[in-house]
Length: 315
Image (tube, rainbow, N blue to C red):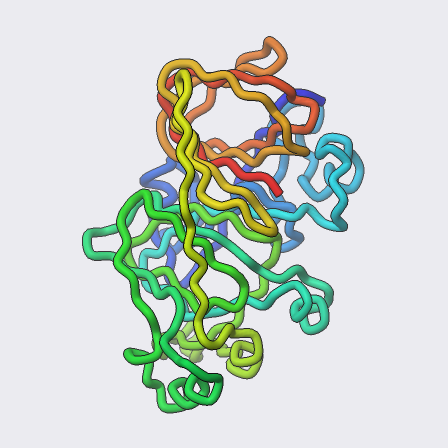
């Protein structure tokens, strides 16, 4: 019950996807339009499978339902979080997500979707859409109806290493040339507001969800500031990006050897750069960029050695 659960990613092809998940992480992707790596997932639309050890071949959904002690008997009907890597080779649709209350009623009991982004890489001059400029619901609706996107949407320049907290109700979109690690509630509910009049493989305009989007969007816009807290100790620099209702997210930068204490019900870990060794309960595992794993409740202490960057989260 102490050893890490290494997981097999699930890949999703998207109209805006590309090749970066293969080029940057060495993944075997289904096509050159692969937009999403569901790295740590117990969502029924793409559950992760354990790669090795006593639980090899089991899905994360099965473990959550049958072996809750692995997760400190955490109280939730479903595994609460989902870790993704997104390759925005083209602009994503402008979209918004509902909160728990709205999704529960309107999306068959699905969770709402608050998320956050760590910018792994992006092209020079890259931007995101993050919020809007409307001061009232009436103004918001009018600008959508008149397709006044330039004056409605709030754009922000980004660079590698930036972090954004995106609560439900926030209008947002990743834009072309961006590679992101996303930590989110375990939900697959998205309402499209605008999709650049793109057509799918059959030549049809992609569906919009304007009525629901207008209902759930926060107006006026409310961007919650994120103040990172940095702590440096022997062998590691820990940046805490956010400690919010649904998740806490950190970046660990290890150079040398660092010892950690597992004091959470479970930890979700993604290696975004470098390689090294993870030692748990006197067993050592080689780990490298692109690996994703969960450290269960009983892990207690563990050591990471090498030169690595990791994004770590817990509920």
